[in-house]
Length: 340
Image 1: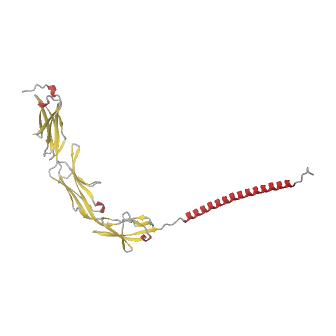
Image 2 (image 1 turned 120 degrees about the horizontal axis):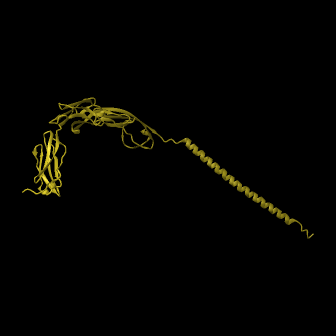
Image 3 (image 1 turned 60 degrees about the vertical axis):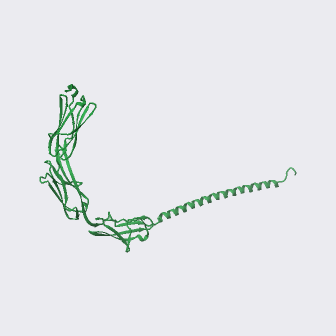
């Protein structure tokens, strides 16, 4: 039976949701939506990719019908993804081009992943398996590109002389494919171990120390090297515990003989420790004593002046009292003129 659905009930074209690029051997989910369709349960879907029909699931929600599928391909190049939606006699479709690309499997080989200093190390980056044409290969580290090229034989090499600073250096083999201005890449990495004899310098084992007697101080001495060197220091024929806090005494003064060893060699270094005793500031002490003496003298002078002033005052008061008493006595001894 043919549905009486009118054209207005299926006015909008389907919407196809899918990426533009698909790596060969991988899966990608795609969705086709038929919006504003009624009756929604009468919508019929047909999905195809690279000429083959797809298995899909359909969901209905309100006035929206959707179909979901998964696509995959091992054939590189552009392939059509088609979604057709039918409602009665009306069929609408939408098409999207999906580029299927292939990146080769990468193999990174370091001639000797464990090298000794000054040894030549060959780093090889190679590609294996099918790949889209036009890819670029390069060898890099964290800072720069060491070798690159469009290599038809899928092979790239870089040679170097191992140095201490190359220890734990990461090397990266990378392949890049540019598709419609977008870069698709694959990486593989490996670290290089460089073994070398110990080396002590001022940064790892300072040669001169100055300590204050009575203070808490630590003698530190280490060495560069791989494997990590064992460092020991002796003073006066006895092993000293480096790296441990010590209260500085006069006997810490002197020369410490230090050596660093690993299986590739050794290094030696003499460390000189000066212990300074506490020296009082004589000038400051003298100035303080003189200042104190001046203050004492000033206070004594002020006290004497106050005492003298009080004594003089008492003397003048006594003199006035004596004078008054004498005058009074004279008046009492005068004859009585009236009686005469």
